[in-house]
Picture (cartoon, rainbow, N blue to C red):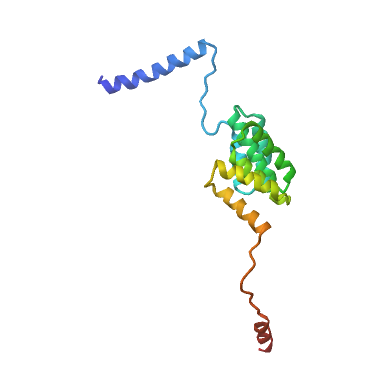
Amino acid sequence: MNKVTTQWLTCPVVVCLCLSAAVAEGQESKTVLGPDNPDLYYGAEALLAGDGEEGVRLTLLGVKRAANSRDRTTGLSNLCAGYIMLEQYETGLSYCDQVLVENDQHWRSYSNRALAYLKLGRFEETEADLQKAEAIAPNARTVKVVRSMLLDATNPVAPLIVIDDRRQAADDDEE
């Protein structure tokens, strides 16, 4: 046998020894393929696809199974966004607030909360959250979008040119 063949035959033996050592110590051996928390993963996919109801349903399940604070924070932030998508702004706000209690540097939650405040007509709170989000992530596209929505709501641009198409409509009637 050559050296390469010997190495390939030795490899399964080493794996078996590692597995038997883990079992002997009472540890469970498992192989994870795909996301650690499928409910959070597929909930996020549903939200990105525009399916707020399914996204919220799956994300609620995923938050219950969250194995660490990062998964929990991500899930709560996605719930905030999902409820805003469903136009349940007060519920969305409560999830954003939970995230920000756990992590006051989570710019996405400030951005999401600003959007909820905007939809509720609470412009001062929108501005405050946008400032916090911009300080943390100054180039984030979603923060810029919410900023432009706030400007549209509070200081709309008036058109400089108004097209009067009444004459065109009268000409069309004559034909």
